Amino acid sequence: MALSGKCVCGAVSYAISADKHDFGACHCSMCRRWSGGVFFGMAVKPEEISFKGADNLTTYKSSEWAERAFCSKCGANMYYRVTAPGPYNGTYHMGAGTLDEYGDLEMTGQLYIDIKPKGYSFANKTKNMTQAEVEAMFSGS
Image (cartoon, rainbow, N blue to C red; front, top):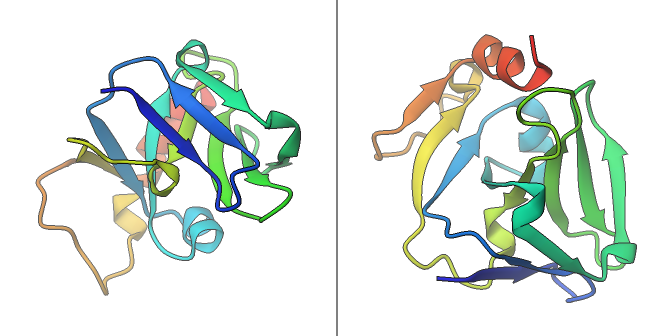
């Protein structure tokens, strides 16, 4: 199933060429502030995605290893992208809420599980990674 998505106003849209089957949840404090709750994201390699209206994206360097992008027209959060050298460099983590349809996507992983707020939990059995594991993976160390 081809996946596509857009921001709230439609000034930024995208199409994903690769077949995707899963997305994950990030519980870090930055993602919670950025998304207003848990961030549901789908990893997409740079060569698997094309954007229309990319000139309407504004990026913010949110850490030593990533940047976040939002639509400059409506303010909708679109993705965070790994900027650190290493095997994940350039990988987009598209906000699953920006998808036109979820299709059969399944949540398979959770990041920063050790700092997840205690007020909620998901019933799915997922791969869980701690803060130290995630930061080592994305920072290239």
